[in-house]
Image 1 (cartoon, rainbow, N blue to C red):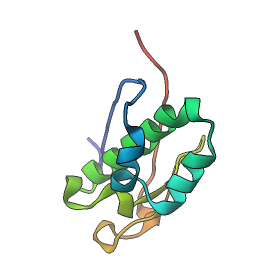
Image 2: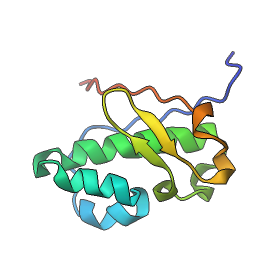
Image 3: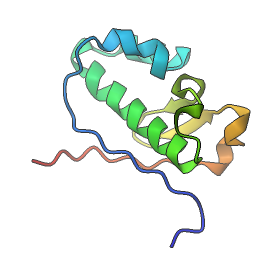
Image 4: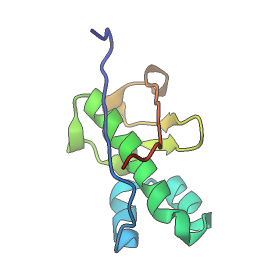
Length: 105
């Protein structure tokens, strides 16, 4: 049994219609800027990476969507990290993210 909270989120890799309409709800300004610099064909994949990392973090915190995901800032690169969180989540140093993009069939 874990001594620390664990949050998990799994999403199927897919193209998301009307993705732009979800940016403000889910992504912080810094993340939106990164997504807009990314080639369009990778937007859904990167958005889902942000989404799953944030949802797992909010689940681990036990807060769910009582905290807006756009108030959490994530580095969604190869070694994901929490860059900023609202006070309700404590310090960024108490959170560790692990991500895997291994599609299954």
